[in-house]
Image (cartoon, rainbow, N blue to C red; front, side):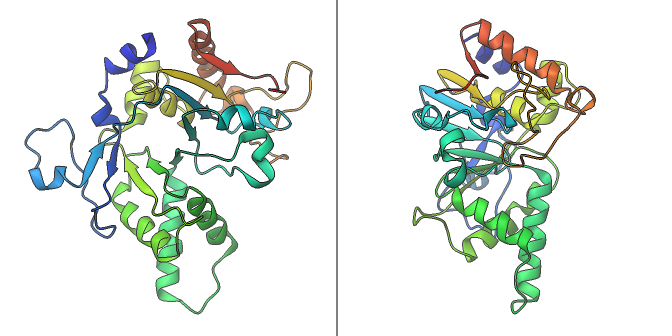
Length: 277
């Protein structure tokens, strides 16, 4: 795959993602420099490089273009489903975005919010959790035994607090514990250099990672425009129908990123922007 060669020219899979293995104490995550052969052998046992090699991967963005798309079954039919920033799926969104997830990204705001929720719960056990904490916990628990991948560099040492908080409050659907993952190298900087975009979006970062292990990639929910081809208004997030954003002046320069995705589609990849029904 041409995209894989391009991404591999600047980052290897072991530097892009490490997954804490099941034997790891959630209260003592150890972050390694995967490229540094001098890292203590004991710390290398804490996390593993992603080893799965799914044939068909769906990367699901959060654009409102998915509303009414009926793409849920198509998305769920893939071997691997990667979602953005703990976006809700299933339930009321099942028809449009599907009910399965293999991996979801977690952004810095969500990580720090989970840390605050954990600290408040520890200090004030008798005080009801805030709606923000309840919603965040539900989204995390919905991942089941899937992977929560923190792509950012800053504050990743607080992942242990988030992991312990979720575990303490139970896992979702009886599927076991979430698998927590991080990037030994900061993927923002790597993708900024790779794609000549100063502030790459989570979607572009996720696409870059997936190109390292997926045989085929289909992109859903990537549409950075305020109106669709039928001139209907498109919300910024499918789960926030009233949300809007000026995409042209957004710091991620999403219309420029969209050109990358269209180029990928011209090379044989799949960029789905039309309804699936």
